[in-house]
Image (cartoon, rainbow, N blue to C red; front, side, top):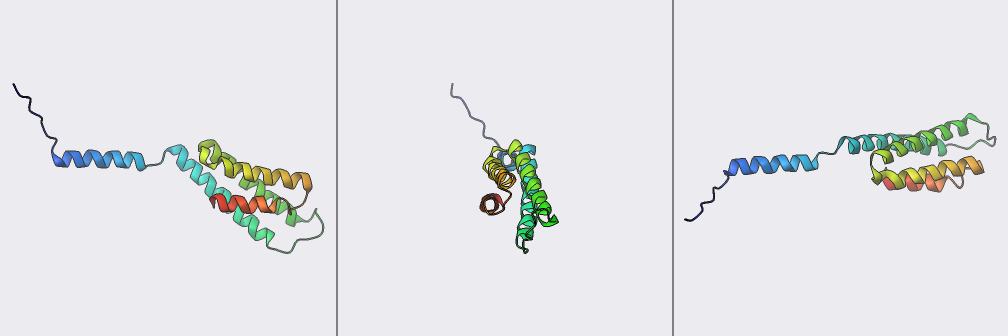
Amino acid sequence: MTSRRQLIPLHLLLASTLSLAACSSTPSKATAAARESAKSACASLQQLTDQLARPRPSSLTDPYYQTAEQYLNTATNRAADAAQQDQGYQEFADTLHRAAQTWQVTFTLDKAEPLIQQARKEKC
């Protein structure tokens, strides 16, 4: 007795292939959340970059520096949120964390600024 193979109708095969492709190309909720956090971090980095482009006051107590630090802290926190959701953002978060630490320890932008620019190039 010979066995007969039943062929799957072409329209069913195409429909199931398209369904599988849609499933594999749809990002997970964690990935989508990570992207949103990264976008938010990049928006804060853009605000920080705009702030840093302005003339810098000589007094470290000037609101200029408080505003810049706030932008950096917001970007750092959003990048950390992204890294929690998706490991692909870990280096981005680490770089911003180092920039924030550098700023807090040295109280100067000179050493933190290259790290800020590096983070922007990485993910923004």
